View 1 (cartoon, rainbow, N blue to C red):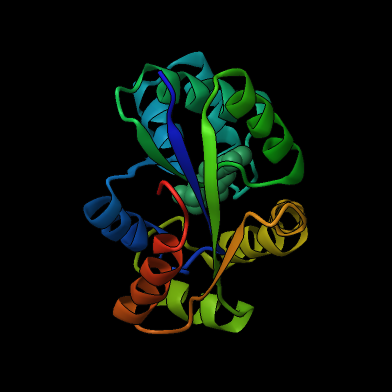
View 2 (view 1 turned 30 degrees about the vertical axis):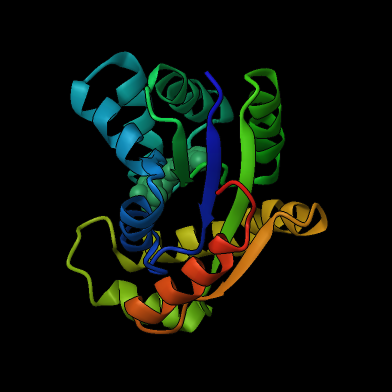
Length: 189
Ligand code: AMP
């Protein structure tokens, strides 16, 4: 069964999950959130879950294999025909593997939404959250990963003309307005 795929990219604190939900309501794309899928596995207490926990707790990325095996399996098994990926791909090589996954399954990448947010604004927003993994060290690690690693996947999609640039420093409503206007221009969305 063919599926239409959107990718949501943006640093921690950019409001990705909020926009996922708005996009789901408006366009019917079901969110697949990598962080949630990993945390689910940790909760199960499996051997894999324990290995994931050891990496996540210090803000490190899990291996390509751990991330892709888990999320590809979920996407394939899902009945959803429209999917928005959040948190995967997160680095260049993941984006290459994801391209291959899309191609071999006859899915279609409709676009890659990029919520642009400065590092300072990300830190400001994250410090306002009261989640225990949002310690300063982990916040910095996540933002470093984003600005050094994820940026390479973003550049790849920019070159391929798949990137939909969004100003993430606006209100939730205005961020969504910009996303909506830009998505509506995509044929077959
Ligand atoms: P998040 O909820 O997106 O902040 O993800 C929580 C943690 O899961 C991250 O800090 C990483 O350790 C890990 N993680 C999430 N997505 C990925 C990914 N695509 N590749 C590797 N590790 C990931």
